[in-house]
Every structure is written in structure tokens, then in C-alpha cells.
Length: 310
Image (cartoon, rainbow, N blue to C red; front, side):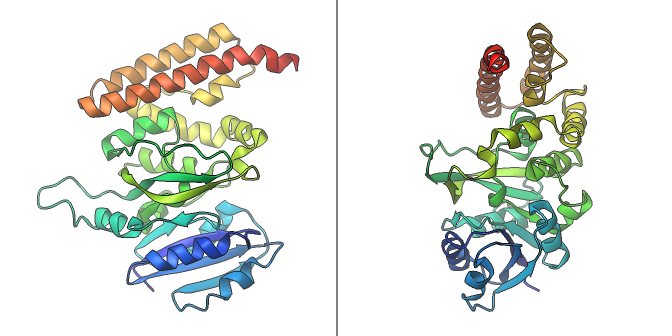
């Protein structure tokens, strides 16, 4: 088996799959391969993938079972030291895999440098409907990653490259609405070192039909008890006290606005104390994100009465 395997679950993506696979193959390092699992597509996705006829690419099919199940099957049927993610509607940018592998293997750290990360992500550029301007490239160090996770999910799933052993230690993916964020929370709570590189490694396609655009899906994620438990475990580790996710607190129907604001203020105080222990550059980035999330929280609370009326 290759040293690196790029895992690509596919469901009815025949239109975008050629660009995704072409860009992945174009930038694939030596001693690497691509494992495609067609997850019960209703179109010609499997045929499109097989048409590449490239020895580095394998294609399997099955009945539809969902992305978490598909990724676990891909993990179980491959055995490379490192695994990376790619979605069927995105495009790999030059240098992505090379930079991530270099970080994971420690080739750019030198003697006496910091420990190697267990998982490396990149930033993204967006294209398509609703794409936002390219953000300022910014790295997230492993020492800061957990605090960022307590504020929001700071990375896109298809930018992941990780040690297989790290994913296996926490049991892989779980069947929850945000299987990626749930995995990051468990990795961080288990002591894994997660890092985001500043340079974009992926062109991320935006379109109205993607599941993350669904309000129903977002609420399911915000109220999922399994993800809430993972969040509580990480907050206990980093803040010294179990906390509720900001989004979960917002949609908690058992609390009124005053109670929500009071609980959020306690959370902000705990996070601020943790942020103040970080170096200056880290503090600035985390405070900006905390301020952004605070504005989002207050805006959401002010919208709640109109939501209830409508």
C-alpha cells in the first residue's frame, strides 16, 4: 500500500468529480494513492471515476450509508501511514500535499523543534455561489487549536491530512451531523496535535445544495447530544469547567435570553482567561474570533423573538 492515501467518498457527483480527481492526481506525491468509495450514487459517478484508468486510483461501490460510514469503510480498507481527505466537488491547489506531508514528517522543523503534529489542515479559497473573498492567510498552532474549536470549527474537512494511528486511537468517525467537528473535538481532547497551515490548499466549491447550507442540518448539529458531550470534555480539559457550545446554548429552548446571556458571559470569562495565557499573536487571533462569536450570539438572541412569531 502507498504511504499516503487520499480518501474520497462520493455520492451523485458526476458533474464535479472529474475536476476533483484530476486535481488530486495532478498534485499527488510519489508513494501515494486515491481510494474512491461510491456511496450509492444515483448517477454515473462510479463510471466517471473508473474512466481515469490510473493505477494510483481505486474505485469501490456500495449501497448508500452516509459519509461517516463511508469514511470508516475507507479507513478499514486501506493501510497507509497517512490519510488525507478530498471531497468530490472541490479542487486541490498546488503544493497542498507536499506541505502537509513535510509538516507531519517533521522535515521542516529541525533538531529540537516542536513535536510533529498528528493532523494538518490548510486554509481554503472559495468559488461558486456565495463564495467569500480570500481571507488573510493565518496559521493555527497546535497549542491554540483546541481553543479555536471551542469557538467554532476553524477548518474545512477536505483539507485534512493525518496520521492514521491518530484517527484510529479515537475510533474514527461517528454517525453525527458534523462528523468532522466531532472528530476534531475528540482528537484534541485525546491529546492529538492539530495544526492549520496558512497557505490555501483547496479550492472549496460553494453551492446552494450542499448540506451545510441547510438550516435543518445546522440545528441538528447544534443540538446533537453526542457532539455536546465531546465539546464538554474538551472544555473541561482546556477551561477547567464543562461548557456548552455557543450554538447549542443559542437554541436551547429551556433557557430564556437572560439565562443564556449569563451562561455565555461565564463562558467568555473562562475562555478569556485561557486566551490570556497564550503568546501575543495567538491572543490577537483568538480575541478576534471570540469577539466575532459574541456578536453572532447576541444577534441570534435578538432574532429569536421574530423566529418564534414566524
